Structures are given as structure tokens and as C-alpha cells.
Image (cartoon, rainbow, N blue to C red; front, side, top):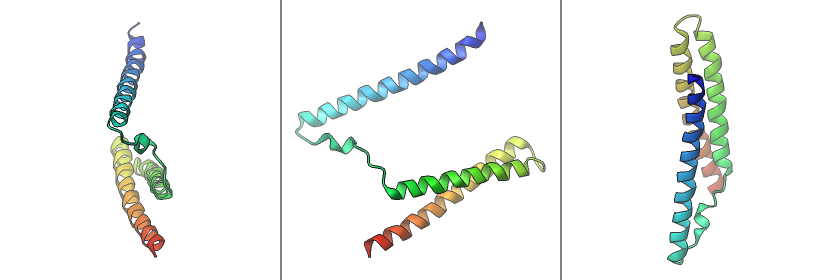
Length: 109
């Protein structure tokens, strides 16, 4: 019987977070419309550069899982996975920064 409380609590927490998010977003949009401003700022466009950044980051995290698996034979499994994922994820973000900055310079020319 006690095992049912965790999933119920999980879904209630997700519902509460989504409810607060949607009601706050609606209030912000209504406030913008009342002031006569355009509410089009909430239309998020996913640029190609953000897709490149996410792609490189997720590839690096995948490599972190592979490296963590190979390091789990040498050291503690949990430590190996977390350190490899975090380090390679950070390296992936740094690489994505350099690649996107190159692409932006190329686009400006």
C-alpha cells in the first residue's frame, strides 16, 4: 500500500508545476495585451544554432555514458558514470560554443 504514494505524489507534483506555469504565462500575456504590447515574444523559435548546440551536448553526454561504463571496471560505478557524463557534457558545451561562434562569424560575413 505504501508503494502507491510515490507515483501519486510524483504526478501531483508535475500537475502542480504545469498548472502554475500555464496560469503565470496566461497572466503575463494578458498584462502585455492590456498595456498594448505584442504578446508575440512568447512564440519561441528554435534556431539552427540551438539545435547544433543541443546535438553536440547530447552526443557528448552519450559518450560520457560509454566512458563511464568503461571506467566502472576501474572505480566505483556511480562515481564513474556521474563524472564521465558531467565532464564530457561540459566539454560538449564548450565545443558547441566554439562551433556556434564560428558559424555566427561565417553568417555575418
